[in-house]
Length: 155
Image (cartoon, rainbow, N blue to C red; front, side):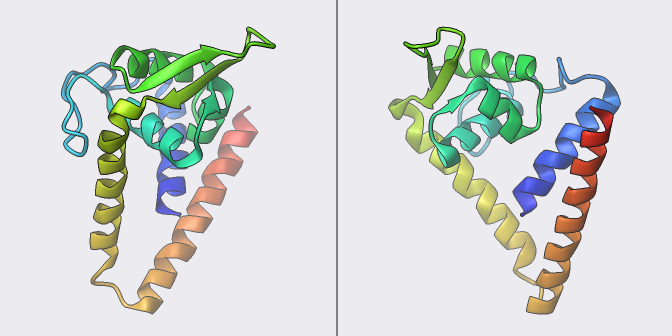
């Protein structure tokens, strides 16, 4: 639920800033402490985690799943491919369709990023009682719904 909230909030923030095509951090070279790699943006780490969670995706499915434009998803896939995180292939029946899957050589890096982010959420929730966690879940569901409704209205 927290990840869904963050995806929705991030997509809305990017639209509000009018900077969907070139978000901060793209190609920042700073890397991600969870993967230990440099030269990959936070967007790319997020996209790699999405492919890890959901398996092979088309660029359109990736865009939809991350709440970003098709064009931006295509740029993120280019970044991931250049960093050898993903393998990009055209569909043999319909060359317009591009499929993306994780490179098996980086699976451990992506798993590490996925688990690191999960542990961060767990640590944040750890001191809360069950009723407080329930309140957090309710809050996140409601905010996620409102953000999605707002994004749908803008389209």
